[in-house]
Length: 244
Image (cartoon, helix red, strand yellow):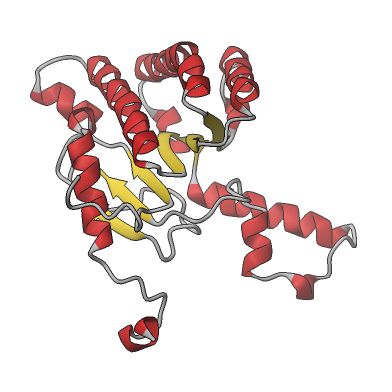
């Protein structure tokens, strides 16, 4: 903590939570056990971000590609999501945390969608922090979805095609109204974005760690934030322009 500047915290942190399966293999247990241990890391990370004062935390919980995993594993992941919503909604409400989601929720079963709806309703007035869960999410799908919405508005003469710009596209993404991530953390030693927030990460600082997600702790989070605070964010400008 003594390395962290509380006046220079990332406003929005996004995390690709990778490594549950490798953690399970390393510990010679089933993959589902790895996912359960990963769920514990989610709870700990949410608490740590809340205490630090992070405003937005986006977690890549389930990708649209994950539907292609073995049926038993998908069922287990859905069961863990169900359990998280059951166990944590009261805690989120108590901590002043609002739950939001991005992704194709229509692909989830109706009981999960109902629990998500109830959790959002229960936390809608919270204003201390937003936990944004990416569920059945794909970055390319999100951009296509936004383009289709804009195209329909052009067709309906609601907007002129000459009005289309970066800001308009951003307003039609799942993340409309949220600031773009300042810091992306990916665990498990992989160095790729895996179709996550492709538009929003254009100027995000990237941090990769070999730590497997189930082993990710508050100390790992602080290391990522400390690394972020050592960087100079120029957005295409020179250092001299930034310091003027």
